[in-house]
Amino acid sequence: MTNAAVVIIGAGISGMCTAIDLLKNNCHNMIIVEKSGGLGGQYPGCCCDVWSHLYSLSFEQNPDWTREYPGQEEILAYLQSVAAKWNLYRYIRFNISVDQATWDDAAQKWNVDVRVSNGKDSEYTSAYTIASDYLVSAVGNCYTSFQATHSTSALTMCPPGQLNVPRYPDIEGLDTFTGKKMHSARWDWSYDLKHKRVALIGNGATAAQIAPEVAKVAKQLTVFQRTPNWVIPRQDAPIPEFRRSLFRYLPPVRHWYRAGMMDYRESFYAGVADPNSEFEKLLEGLSQGMMKQQLKDRPELWSKLTPNYPTGCKRVIISDVSLNTTLIASITSTGIRTADDSTEDFDLLILATGFRTVEFMYPIRIFGQNGKSIEDIWRGGAKALYGVNVQWLPNFGMLYGPNTNLGHNSIILMIEAQSRYINQLICVVMDARRRGQTLSLTPNSTRVDAYNAEIQSVLRSSTFAHPNCQSWYKTEEGLVTN
Image 1 (spheres, rainbow, N blue to C red):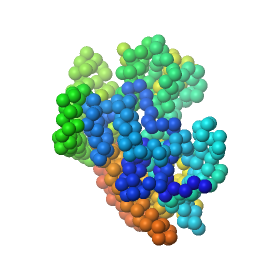
Image 2: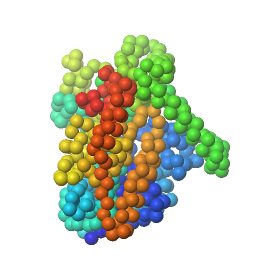
Image 3: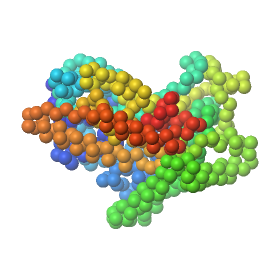
Image 4: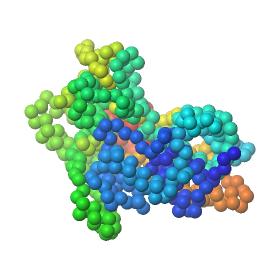
């Protein structure tokens, strides 16, 4: 039987931040459960659209970023260094996936069913159950597993998977394609792109990173655009060694530099909150000016590349290829047929079609008080008090939960605040446990509904809710949940 005070499911930056806060609170009896075999993942051109000095923990600032916008390798190295510094690897169990979490009303505990996915690691046991006093969702994802043996812990964290579970396009014939196809979140590095005819379906932030790298080696790259996106100059540049030395040996300079970046990015909020703001018009002008400068000899593309929704509605893209703006009618066995009945053959289909972002706990099954499922609780749209606590789910909290996302600044700011809040709840529960008592914390349903109504009233007038905008921030019914 395994006993732990805290179990964190997900070794991403949210799980790491929460674990570090637990260590700061002198809680060392924890297990971090991670479904993959290591930290991080990538696709060609994978990088961050937030400045490197903002895409890092405030208490673990990195003076040695080599670029303003870091690539995947540098971000991963940063996370690995943080994990090593705080000795987090001793708490991480890799190759563990989660199937189901059930609240036991009698025992006042969660039973979390997990599976060992690595062949070697599963020789001893292929699956087991973790009993815990608290269940928390951290950034990452849970995949299917099943129940077997039983173990015990005081606290568990389970990730929602906003940006991990691929969303495959609903296109007729997709399964009939006989060539190679891959989703951007499930990249096959063994596939050689050289001399290949490649179709890139999607033109959002991920596609904008993938396209330039694929175009360097592929014989042909065609980008299929459903809706255009606002694109503004990224202005990436190397950070010279003398500046890195300043940041390293004079921390106040680094703090000042980071604070200025934070204030600048926070000024973008006006473009998100008010579709008629002056800042919104400034961003649109900046994007159109960049487009016309780079495509000055292609005026026939200008209207095709100009969105009919405000800039804040979707994530603004900071960033020999052909563009196809005709709707895809179907996928054939050898390629793509568009709405004008023309066909084109391809060797590879890259699906840069995003993630299942509004299904926060998918595919993990959650059952709260009286066996109430998360699907029933969130029927009509996900909601949580402060984006963290969910009604009917005692001793449960989320990081990166409903309506805690943002499109103008670094999500790390939100993660740190949520981690501190959740750790306060953890301390109360653990204090009761030390006294030999049990404590069940459940948000008041009336308070959750009132908070959500307040949030939605503000969001209805934001760019996220614009009628012409279909984005990963809202459901098919138009409810903004991210």
